Length: 129
Image (tube, rainbow, N blue to C red; front, side, top):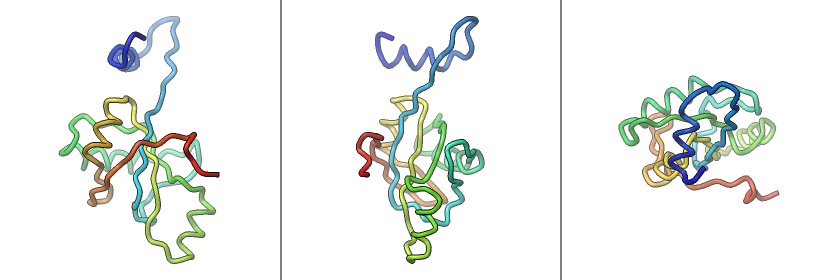
């Protein structure tokens, strides 16, 4: 595609006969989310109810927001370890469908569980091992 707007248009068109559009997620990192938030672990897990609620409450800040996926930055074992250690908050990765939404979320933030959170850009290559 020639630019980001053309790419976003092509991605949002739907199915075209004989063509396959590979989707790209634009992730943001949201630190400080309560560990009690009902976000399920795993790569194939659906968190549709949580996503719908976040979109519904964030629409006042960002009209037209959509979220592809949401997950904790740590795995299920790490989540349990944090809870047992008495920690109350963790980091969530939110995947958005367009780069425009990604930039808007980093500027305006998200509402999760009636609480406002700032977001920052996330890159898998920056993850500390």
